[in-house]
Length: 543
Image (cartoon, rainbow, N blue to C red):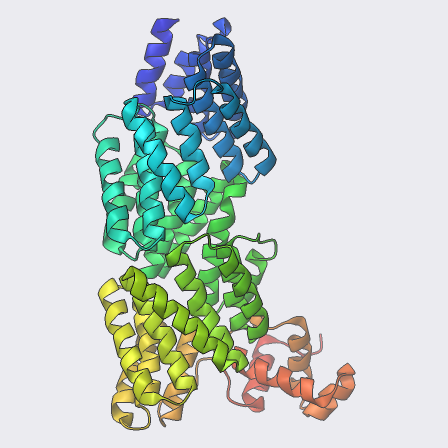
């Protein structure tokens, strides 16, 4: 039995999950908890999640029967976390309570550190820091390198989320140095450390560092065929690709991540769905974004994605309400809050609530000043530029837009850089129209290259106000609502707004709003072009 367990552990270390399953499986008849634990871990890496959980639960109980409280608590924590990320909160809480019961009378031990680090991963940012520091101290005291690495990654992520980016990165790099030096006992620890490093780098806008670690994780996951890692890290990798302007690669990565989640832990797909929906909104593929978000949850990222969709659909009041809810649940994460406040500023401007837009932009500026993080500062300056333009303060808007442009360019974020160029062009339109044209054309070229249809139309609109540029190319009718398709069919038959209203039993004003929305969504200039577009699509043509 000892030989089989030794062979299984060597196979785990080498990433040979089939060999590990075979070795540990040969020792299962004796009910040894180490054999059960190893067998369950091999199953997890092979993507057989439900069976892995069942086997490791049996191992946890066996450790408890043997009086091994450290291992029983550590395994109960692992099981709890798997249920937690699967969205099964009641089971997750139950297993965490079981871990704490296993430690009764043994509070000062390595197992207590595992319970503490799991509590940290579910806490808001500030509580997470305190709990992770306590877990780190226990890991070092008992020389539990896996616990130390887990605690360091939790602490580093929390410090970055709190705006202490340099401190957080040092923690994460320390964890990675330990994890990649062959000191960790569990391959799951290395995978988690790598994913946390990528997530932290991406949230801080450090795309170079994130890309470097994406390569490490990709190689690690590919050589060892770790199905769950493909989903979790694939989503973060896709966000790095999208921010860097590689939208097609990002889309492919998100699709692969969704497939991996479907094979492993479907409930973990929520961040992937939100990321793909945000990309679809930027691409102008609103119907697909709506479908993706039809069953979205209440996480801040899901609410942010839905709010961006509502903004694209010219429904800023609903967007503002969604963003308020997202902001309430950000848990002290400064970087996430900056994304939400940036979108909230846009929503308030669109509703005409300039005073609330000023307040949102001011809060964003205060957060940027407090943390000094370049990505937060860039978002703050872009939001302030838009508020200044809405207030008619073009000179002030120019300074903010130029600052945002410089920061986003240094961060290597082409879409956001082009957005800053559009606001810079708007601020220059009155005094320096030639320079405004140059900035708007540069933005238009970037949006066209990325496939950012909505932003491209915004740049084209600025060009038209400056007396240059064609109308944006007509788009598909897939983004029209069912009511708008009905209106388009009647418009194609030559009906006036009044006639459309009578036909659909609505008043003339809503009919006019529908027509305006249709022209904007199709990217056409007038009713004649909309009718021609409808004819090409077969909308309103009798069968």
